[in-house]
Each structure stands twice: as structure tokens, then as C-alpha cells.
Length: 398
Image (cartoon, rainbow, N blue to C red; front, side):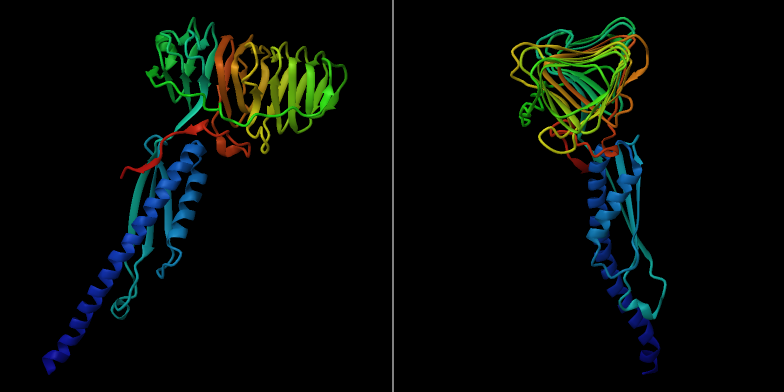
């Protein structure tokens, strides 16, 4: 009896440990599941957040909290770190273990930890040349620079020279690819890779409708004013030193030019331009200052420029002023060419959280310095479906 009495605590401790170890294994499984789910969600957020660690950490913590909300253990600690050159997320989840019978022999429960690393396979596209046959579907020439920060440049042309950089021109992006060939060698960073042609990602977007007619012939703006959304037949001309503020909404330019030139200023938040009719276009010339952001809601949500796919002939949309620093939103020109040729290296579009260009052709020339950002998390302006981040899913890599 004495031996049994002396052995009882040992036997009880062993039994308690066995029960607790079983509970720990189950708890670790739950923690590992939470870490996996958090890493996958954080990797998806990373593809949208352009390396914003605060957003990634917040998503990881939210997912872990949701997965472990019924846990009886103590406080959960979550860390999320960007790894692999900011292309993946490592999440570590730690929590005190649950003591069932072991409380009688120890008061400091061991910490259970699990980790997971996930990578997003999604691709951020921000410059797309649509013409499937032309040479120079995307072209840089002279001393121009096209920089796509954190996103990709893609030419859909099957032509052997569908993507070209001439003279001292340079193109830089996370990735550059072409459905055909390229000319330019070291002018590309990185070197272009082959890729399958995409279907126009915006072809199925809802088409804007024309609003009330504000002017039935070309509107020459002579004095500082605020313009209202609606239809402007024949276009709008803003020149000299006139300052125009655009009220939020959708502007239809029908069969004419939206021309801003001289030292004029045009600015507006939450505005979208719908170009339709015969040879519609915009021209930002001279030393004009243009600062625009797209609507956050409505048919044109995320679209700064939408060219009617049914226009009869193609047009050239021109930026030759060096003072076009904000073009926040998507520029969609399925029949048009975006031509940027400025006389200085002052950055075009650099003040935009993001810009997406989807055009039949894209050309930079002169000393243009075009900066395309992809900081989608920095604005409430949405990226239209099928642009920005496309394809792929997050996956656990470790």
C-alpha cells in the first residue's frame, strides 16, 4: 500500500501529461490551420497592397482571430513578415497550451507555435497593348522612359517587333512579356519573355451612357469655371491661363477633342471621360496642368478614360505637356493610341496611387518619363475587374 501511495502522484502526473499532450496536438492542429488560412489571405492581400506590410499584418491577424475565436487557451500572438523579396508572406502564430489535468503539476503552460508561408501567383498588369498584329504595339523611342512600379507590361501583338524600344528609350517593370517578338535588348529591364495573348480584359465592361447635353457644339472655355457632368458635343477647349474644375461625375466627349493647352489647368476628383462618336480624343498640350482621379462608384467606377469600342476610326490620344502628374484610374482605349511625348523628364502620372493603361497601342517619345504605380491599397478608387491583379491563386509554399 505504501508503494502504491508513493507511486500515485507519479502515475497521476503521467496520466495528466498524456491527456494534455493529446490536447496540445489537437490545439497545434487548430493553430496550424489558422496560420495556413492567414498566410493565404495575407498573400492575396499582398498582391493588392504592393508591399504594404501594415495591411498584410492586419489581414493575417483578422483571419487568425476568426479561426481561433472559440479557443479556450490564452492570448494569441501573430506575426506576419514579407519574405522572398516581398513576393510572399510568412505568418507565425503562437498561443499558450491548454492545461487540463496538468494544472496540478505546472502553472506555466508551454507555448505552441505554428508557421506558414504563402505566395500569391496573381499577376499585376498595368500596361497592356491590345493590337494583335501591329509592330510597335508598345513602343518607346528617343530618350523616353516607361516605368511600371510593381506591375507588368504586356504586348498582345504576335508581330516579331510587337514590343520595341529604340534610341535611348527604356522600359522597366516587374515583368515584361510579348505574344510575339521584341526589339531593344538591354533597353528592357527585365528582358521580355514570351506569353500567350490575352483577350481584351475590359471588353465585357459595362458601357457608359451619355448624360444630359451640356453643349451641342464645341465649348470654348474662356474664364475660370466649374463644369458639370454630361455630354459635350464637339468637345471642350480649355486654353490660355483658364482654370477649370470638374464636378464629380461622367463626362461624354462626342465627336470632338478634350483639349487642354497653353498654361491652363484642369482638375477633378471622381470624374470619368467617355469618348464616343467620330474621332473623339483628348490632347493635353503646351504647359497645361492636368490632375484627375476616376469615380469610385457607378458604371465608370475606376475608369478615368473609356473609349467607346464601337468608334468607327482610331484616334491618337496625346499627352505632350510635362505637367500631367495625376491620372488616377484606368485609361481604356480599345481603338485608340496613347501617345506621350514631353520635352522634359518631369514624371507623368507619378502622383497617382495607380494607373492602368489598356490601349490598342502605347507609345512614349521625346524625354517623357512615364511612371505607372500600382499602389491599389492607397486609394478607394477601384481597379476595374480583370485588370490590376489577374489570374493565379495564393498557395502555401512552406
